[in-house]
Length: 170
Image (tube, rainbow, N blue to C red; front, side, top):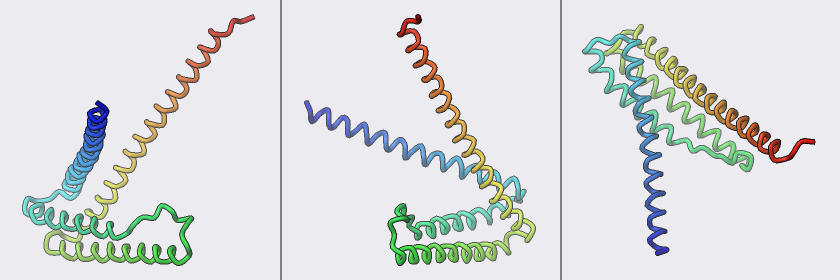
């Protein structure tokens, strides 16, 4: 019986973690769809431009993700030695160089696809989209904080009422 309970608990845990991962992937997919719509709207692509641009852009985004994997975040910065800190800083600078070189290559590859004006609009559209996503995230976090504070206030009021009714007044 214990083994059955253990197996059921394990299966439930695996299922819940898979759902969270699926939700995260779904959220990323929605953001990616919004990015595509945002950029397409801002740049007002012709059919030919869109057909040539999106495969290049997708390759560029994939390469950016690969570069990002090169940098390993250290959560224990305060525990690092000076040498470890130098190495980490050096790695971070290398990653920035790689990002910059990749962006230059990407912009150069777009010369045959988009005008200089549209390439500038692309840079602006990407920056605006990041701001849009960050503002939405901040709003969602502040809404959560307000809800959390509201529930804490409500709990405090309920607790105060319960203590007032429990103790007789003189």
